[in-house]
Image 1 (spheres, one colour):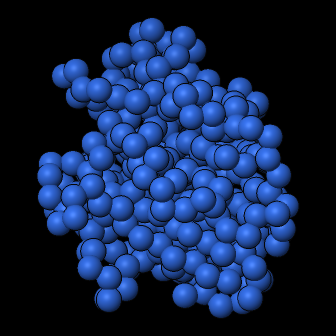
Image 2: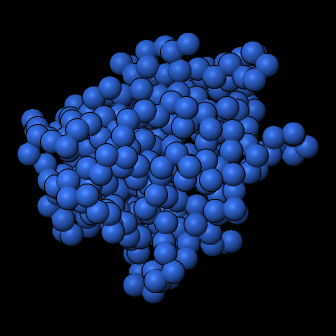
Amino acid sequence: MAQSVGGIPVEAWRGFEGRDRLEAWRANVGEPVALDLAPPARATGVARLAILSWNLWIGRGRLGEVIARVRHVTSAPLVVLAQEAFRTDPSVPRRRGVRRAAGGFPPRMIPRTDIVDLARELRLNLRYVPSMRNGAGPSDRGNAILSELPLADVRAFELPFVLQRRVPMVATLALPTGPLHLVSAHFDPRGPAGAAVVGGAGRARQAEHLLGRLAGDLVVLGADLNLSRGKRERAWRLLADAGFATGVPPARHSWRHTFHALPRLVLDYLLLRDRTRQVSAARVERLDEHPRDRGATVFGSDHHPLLAQLELDGAGTIR
């Protein structure tokens, strides 16, 4: 069952046994946000596209600074696939209903960027769907898509419950080569202690559910997949079998992690599925704040941003 809230349909997950295990999580968050703020533009003449994917660490990542950096690198239209985007809004209940149905949140005062405020400041189209509340305060976090191009056919759906409520979002760009489906997602890092579905098994179920709801020949997935065991996880094999590739650092690349804290692991991915060979070139790079990857954070986050640059001339080779 899908309910349209804030103009974005959100499909509920009712659990493997048919029980609604996420009702309290839904009641703890505010409404989705749909804003069209970018200057009028059409994607029919677009030959290149820049796609940024980043876990914002509950709004601590300085996304505006990173966007400015990307715009110095390329003039291609920009799309941002964000995870752990932070939002405070009157639609978020002032008091949380159930404590266990809220995400953990550090009590100390840390500067955070509200994703709605940033979209207004930069005049970007925004689609935001909250996944969970941030502790006791009236704010929430979730997945977001920001774009300089019009976003169509936006929808969201809950993943199978493992540790916390997770809600990926899908939107479509009308490109000259055909529709490009954009996905922002975030899998659980672990499962509850003593549960039958933990860690890798839970992420595999989430991956299977995600793939069952992704149609289309041209899809870009930007996600914090939390694959602590990398390609050895079943979730990765499911994505690879479904045609997703590119965006994983090969041996020649100098970076071996995207999670900046310890243990340093590759948790973040920008993956492309191009069944009809509409993309002639796809290059993914990790963005570093310090040239030697030093410092406690990366542009304020504990994750590195990933930037993909796509060429859409249809020549038929990906490198």
